[in-house]
Image (cartoon, rainbow, N blue to C red; front, top):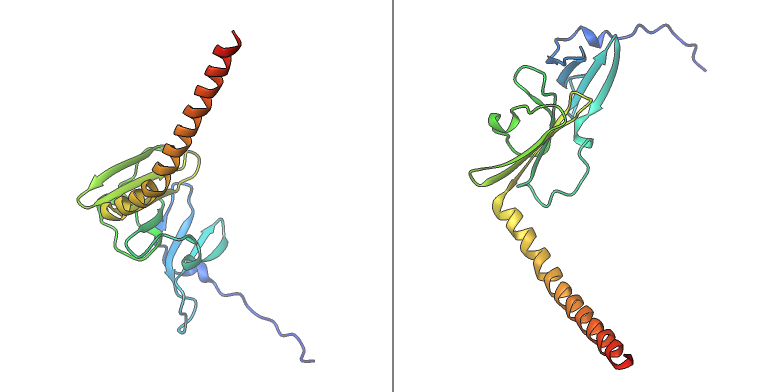
Length: 171
């Protein structure tokens, strides 16, 4: 067995900070750990404690294709840069911050934009869905559940009529 040797820690916090939150958390976006790094990593630090985050793993949900866009951002930073983004481009006006604990939705051209901001933390989330994508999903939902609702409603009507006729026959 080879003897242990002394290793000096890397001062990864010496690299330039991309943004600093209102809680003085430093964020280094697209941090390069070495020359052969393939994943996009972000380095987040507070009071000389650092966390290395693989941002490709943070959003783990089915978005129904490449046309749905999701992002997480720190609203208090200058430029409101998103630090986690799925595929696709975000227009700067979609990243305008909103008040703490608030949410908003609006239509911008051919997109439905939704924003929400944490009441207690300095985080916000933005989702952008093309209008035709939303209509497609609503139509698929309606084709299945409207007939089910009609059948259930007619069944309930029939049961109520039976109970009413039984009650009328007993009086």
